Image: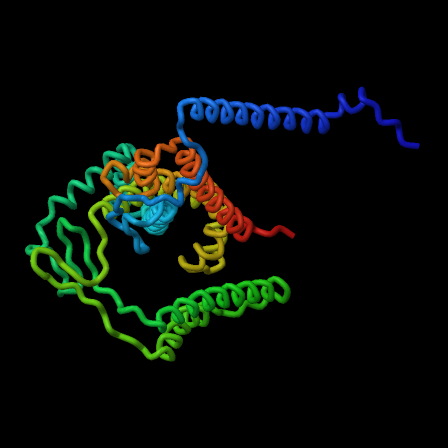
Length: 388
């Protein structure tokens, strides 16, 4: 017979009390926030200050110097926010890739048996990690703006020009074949991952390993090429050229974008390098010696023994660094890059809706941070070692 449920019994239940405390805290937080918002709205109404998000449909009446989509001053504040978010995502995504690749290389170099390589890696980490990030961004921006003007730009066989106006690169002319090639690349990566998982499952079940590295490499490299050939194999490029006092054509990376990209990626790479180093060193020396004893080469040693275990240590702190990089993109306001924080300041000044604009900005940054954390959590579960 079950004992009767009483209030005294519930109160002495640790699980119930934990839920009760959490519920009380949530109610207090929501109540406090509602009171503060209501108080602010009442104060603004008394002073004739408009509230709400209706201002997003109003004309922006300002220009944005760099955008991935068309934007004119006659467009709305909402479209300005879209441009700002896209600019933030663009510089953040490229910086994450750059920081990951460079940080991984520096982290491995930090453990090199070559004294010169190891010392260089250590010097890089100490210099970039212990210098304020804003100072680094301003340094790179100053360096880019000190480059020659377009008429004396540094040129790479007329396919790339570097000047104080930024970096201009030759770019393929838009064609449907490139879209199909991109889809084919994604499909090839998914197929290669599926093949690798199937081979690994088969090896665990039967003990027989099937070498599929070159098959997957050919699939990932070859399928997009096949799609490009089927699409007509376009090879026309928009080549930049000097016209008047500026370089036209191609794709342009502004000085502000280059400076922010370098400042974010080089700074975070120093932290990623230390995370990679600690992750590799977390693998016990005995397992490495055992792998060498059975004849595993350096590549197989890293792919089959070190990385699967090191990634469990690397992924969580690396996720925090990616989130930090995305938030630090707001430092672009110091050099005039039109990211979310910079554009939001302009909208606050023109619209007068300070609370709403700050709320939008906070919601966007939170959404990006939670999205990064969710993706990395999924990846972290995928690379975890499955114990029998």
